[in-house]
Image (cartoon, rainbow, N blue to C red; front, side, top):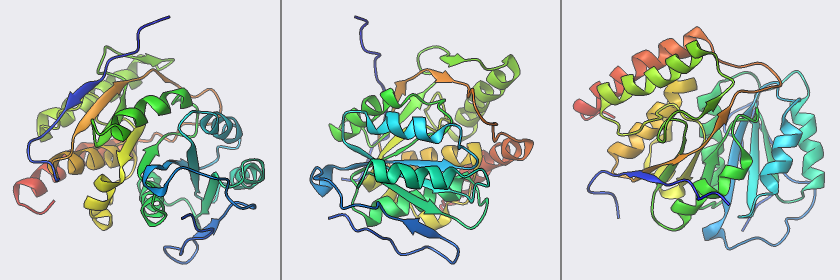
Length: 286
């Protein structure tokens, strides 16, 4: 049996010391589908974990990912935030709700509104529904659901406020990426650390677990980023607010089904966002 991978912690001084079947839509065009059946017994509200998964055209992956997430120890629930996928992703999720009553939620949005706003919608849902822990992960199977308990454990134990599934904290743990994509991702983290001072090896990682107090402390109305820059912004805001960030080594595997959502616009946004965050922080306007 192999030894468990270590945790690597970073901290800043001065850190701050019942399920409903529907949720108020955030704006016109936002539809929330509750489970078809009454929820099964669950842990106390103060100890529940929700995994937020944004989707756009993930029909080839979503059923497998959902099944594997719900098989993990820790009694995770899942919220899918779907941006009107034309491939029928939402219909598959509704079918999964009948298979896993009380554990799968779905928000259907009116169009392709972006990754960052999808996560913000999920965070608001988690806070309104009294989840204690909120995880992020991709829908394309690049994040291994078996790593969710490892991300949750330090937050649940009070050792960290935000854990980050890191590809780079313990060497380079990426599979099936072309060298150009790897250099871009690794370089983005170095670039972010240099400009902002954020002490994280994998600043753009999208596999995370937040304690709810982090999300409650961040003004989500001010978070406007998408793509890589959304992950950078959430890390930076949490760190500047004094919360403890901990990187947990993971292995990232490039998707085998569906198409990547990476674009030049996402890269440009991330390049400018780090300067904006740094400047706003210096001016006290973060």
